[in-house]
Image 1 (cartoon, rainbow, N blue to C red):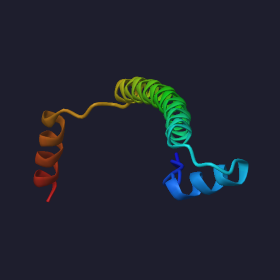
Image 2: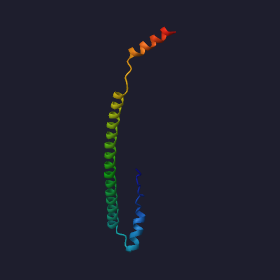
Image 3: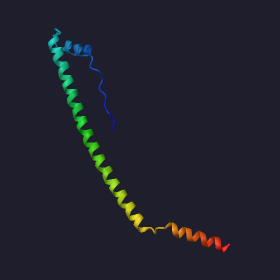
Image 4: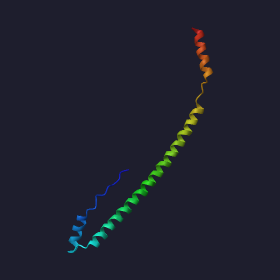
Length: 100
């Protein structure tokens, strides 16, 4: 997942935008606008965090399901294949030795 990075809030830009709206530059309104911008950014980041956590939870659940399926298939495969015991291999080796 890609993460959006917001540009740094420039105080000069905020002043220039307000300067076109009013002739006076009120420090309190500038501070207020910065706080509003910061709160908006915080809310956006919290939303992104929640979405990412949900996505991670779904991915972890999917991983658990895949692990369960893998283990189940491994058990089925193990039970379906004939098992060679070391004695059988040893006997086969002894028979080959006597034939020569």
